[in-house]
Image 1 (tube, helix red, strand yellow):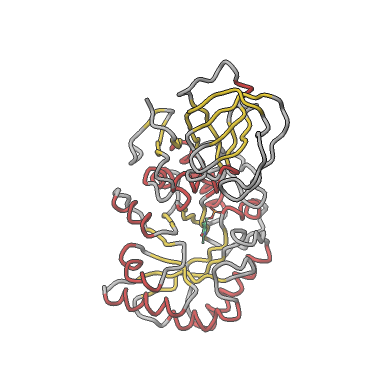
Image 2 (image 1 turned 120 degrees about the horizontal axis):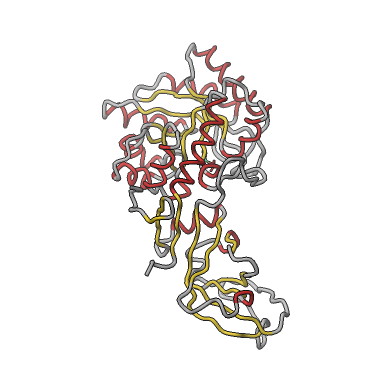
Length: 367
Ligand SMILES: *Cc1c(COP(=O)(O)O)cnc(C)c1O
């Protein structure tokens, strides 16, 4: 019997998606860092991305980067989250580059790298309005000037991240602004910035429309490779698979019950007050996956007619009337996942991870 609950992922589809995205980016002179944070740095996924043409791997957690290194993946690794002051030494030790916005960090990374006789590359992040990481443009020149003369670090370039926090949609204007900031810096400091990193999965439409300034030469892409979608409207991206990942959960209880609760109602286990539609008696199923394992709002049953009623920490509760006579105790239902659901399922220790190729399970190294 296969372990349950489990998340299966098709490495050939991920590789194919990576090839589609790196092909599009390559046509516009853009190198791609494949971002593995949503899969907790699963080595098999990183390998599939690399086979599909990403130049290197980016992750937000050192633990994930260590995991990939220990699995024998030979690639440069970029920390795509700001490093903590308390962990600058480890960042220098186990990554080749990191994204930065704080002078105190740059100084600490400089000392840590210089002590080890290394050069750590930094991508300085600029905030063009999404209000997550990055220097405000007016503060950028002085920080780059300081960074450029610190020993042990090399300024690899400038980056911007849009869409992730405030949902600001990237535009041609944002890209032009990023390039003009970079060129002002190059001129005033007499240096050349190797990378101008303007895009994540939210920038694919802009890129395809030909609206990305030709000096933008780097993208950091996660979701479009993993789930085959751009991220401003979550449109399926042409030539990619949206179904590389599938969640499987097992039926623990199957009974005909009323569709309405019986008795006076207060709050549920999570402080909510769920609503129930009157549908008479329904075939009610409890599955062995819950809020501790997945973002329930982000999963969709793959069998038409099956309805998710809700979830507690360990149970998913469904109306499976559409499957009357077809479902058994010990049987499984499958679900598609969005980014949030995938992130949580990959992070849950209780969900087994099963890479597959051509439908056949392979080991966790992806071979
Ligand atoms: C997560 C992340 C990415 C990847 O974003 P996607 O939308 O998954 O492509 C890129 N850059 C940074 C800084 C990130 O944190």
